[in-house]
Length: 146
Image 1 (cartoon, rainbow, N blue to C red):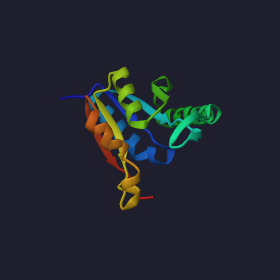
Image 2 (cartoon, rainbow, N blue to C red):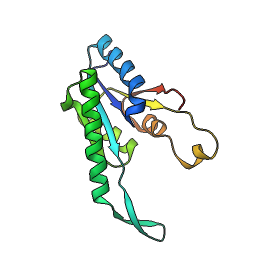
Image 3 (cartoon, rainbow, N blue to C red):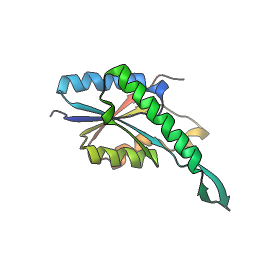
């Protein structure tokens, strides 16, 4: 089996290097296209009880612009077509899967940082959700400890 289109899910610039190194090596081996994805979460500023009601659109738009600049910089540094860098707003795993389907990716590459204790209970792993719901292969790259 060969891969034709790899989608790299970038959570932040600091963790992107090991993902992009592996993705570019695989893209070269398979002669595959390479795309980047980053999801910006909705920022909520008000709530009624436990239900958030007002997304802070200005903050979300600022985060989106910063994310677009981050992906543009990564594309320039790694020689990736900036037209293949996608910034979207929403939940990370949902957006990764949506963009993968949209661009026809047949391999999604995500970073994995082991979590322990209460933090692992409170925050779900994006990569676990992507693996569980993806219609294509997923490669989880172990990221260096912070």
